[in-house]
Amino acid sequence: MNFFGVLSCFSLLLAAAVAQDPKPCVSPPLMSGGLTVMTGDGLLFSVGTISYDAFGQRMRVRNYGFASNQTFGLDQLMLFNQKVYYEIDWSKLSCKKFALDASFNPMRVPTDAKLAGQVFMGSSSSWGMGALVNTWQGSLPNNGMYTTVFTEIGCIPLTYTSFTPTSGWTTLSTYNWVLGNSNPMDYIPPFFCAKSKLEETETPRTIFTALESLAVKTKKEE
Image 1: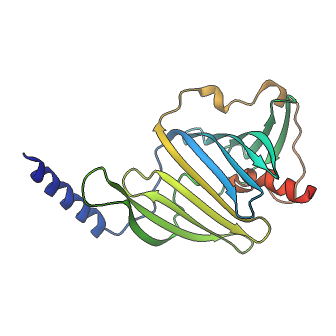
Image 2 (image 1 turned 30 degrees about the horizontal axis):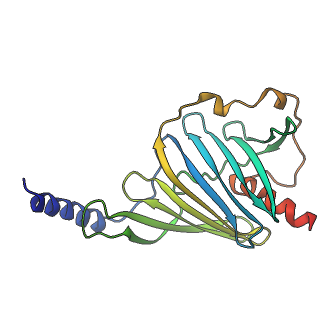
Image 3 (image 1 turned 90 degrees about the vertical axis):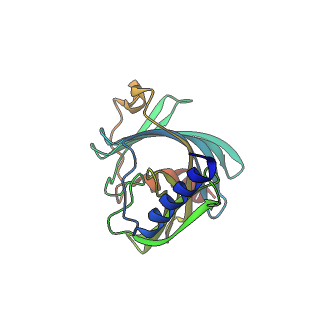
């Protein structure tokens, strides 16, 4: 089969994919990649790495960035099955422990999400020039809202943007995903977390309020 024949087949596959009504999907169970987190008020910008294990319901996020013109490093371990979240400070060998609300996970499209649209990121003119993605939207507790973008093929998460009256806008972008986890120790709390007691909070943390925690602290300090 020549190049034009391959291109024609690929175009037919794309057309068939577009013709189907996209459904909420679930990402691959083991993934590792990079991420950026940014708040709408500009108080926080960070880059880091993320590891995700759906089998064990665990996630590890390591962030390095700027908050109010100061650099920071934040290591976060989220154990959804135990409903526990650790905020780890390696410079002080300290660890804070919080209750975690595991009801919403960004590695899947919520079943009640509404399709906002489907587009090609890049170009659909030829193979390899773009990716077909779906944008979903929905509501969060306390008058919040979100939009999230996943690839149509593979259900790979790309961006998540949320708004709540208390924390404002937050955008999480992911990239360079690979399937699998290379380090199982990523999901084991450091030894100095063993004596950490559960911090008292009005409501359990979610993955998003956890990622926003440094920016929220910065606001309070100002």
